[in-house]
Image (cartoon, rainbow, N blue to C red; front, side, top):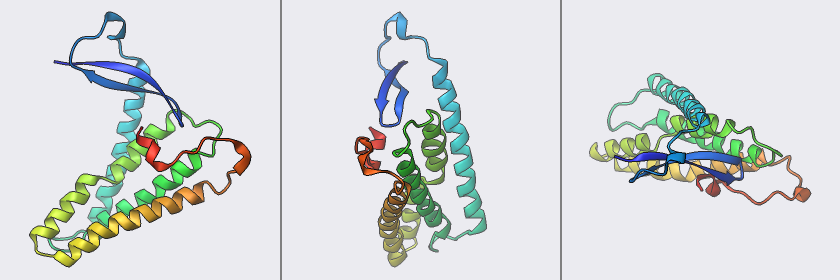
Length: 177
């Protein structure tokens, strides 16, 4: 059985805490879990529940049978990409990001709204139903338009940034580091 080890890490969003499952017990000083970890975990769960609820609501409003095009999931993924780009664009222009904002909105809400597993499951159902054209439109359209909308949101979110502010360059790819 492993144990959790909590570490600090500096990112473009500021100092964050993260946990790593260790295969052997760490020394006694690292056995305690910082209460801030549980607060952040609660915010991720709260945001994730809200995002997943929005996704579920979109599927109730726009249901589809196997072999039909999954418009609700496509809309949730594309809106989520636009909002993630907007969020990242705005966050990179701020002098200081509130430390709990990213776990709540980006990881939680947008993570719950845009799920890769639903995207993959919809693609598998379309493939099993023999809807090859719909499959390719869905898979490639989600990737292409998702990326374009993320970049559009990113550009729009950074529109108020002054080039001489001296902030380090930070893009969507660095969020997972």
